Each structure stands twice: as C-alpha cells, then as structure tokens.
Amino acid sequence: MNVDMDTEDWLGCPTPLEMYQHQCSILVEELAQSERMLSRARANIAGLVQMNDMVMTGKAEAEGKLAEALEKISTLEQQYSFASVQSVKIVTEQRDYLLRENQRLLAELKALHELHPSSSA
Image 1: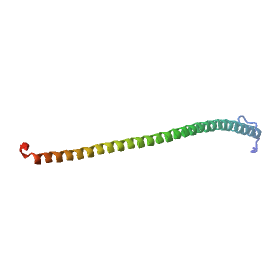
Image 2: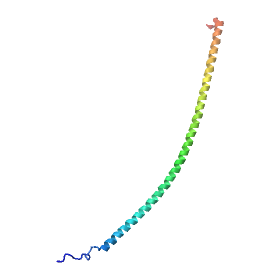
Image 3: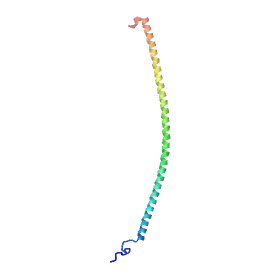
Image 4: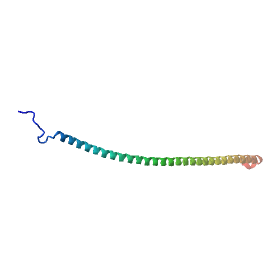
C-alpha cells in the first residue's frame, strides 16, 4: 500500500496556489474595508473640526455678551446704589430738619407756658 498518495486531486482540497489566492482576496477585501472605514473616519473628523469651530465661535460670542451683561449689571448696581444712598440722605436730612423744628416749637411752647401759666389748664 502506497502511503504517499497525491491528495491534491481530491475533491474539496485546494491547491497551495488556490489557498494563496484565497488569502490574497481576503486581504484585499480587508484592505478595501479598512480604506472605507478610514474615509468615513476622516469625514467624521472633518465634521467634528467644523462643529468645534462653530462651538468656539458661539462660545466667543456668548462670552462677549456675558461680559457686556456683567458690565451693564455693574453699572446699574452703581446707579441704583447711588440713588438709594441719595434717597436715604434726603430722608435723613428731612428727619433732622423736622427734629430741630420740633425742638424749636417745643421750646417756644414752653416759653409761652412760662409767660402765661394760667392758659395751660
């Protein structure tokens, strides 16, 4: 019995050349798939860069508007603070004037009572 039989002719057994060709076709398909994935990744990256540019532009605009709003708030606080202080000063001056006037009138009334003690009843 001959053990060293040539098995290349058997049904379903590929030759070494066929195996290499099949491996090459698998590698070519993997390479094409990798190129498609790389192309999609590059497109995604370009989109992300564009989105980042838009976000940075929007951020810069928002920061500018925030700075303007904070400046306006500061100005309004100063104005209202000044107006509030002024109104308190005016009320304080009026109170002091009325207190002095009241003391003066009390002194006059006391002087009148001392001059005319009979009318105090």
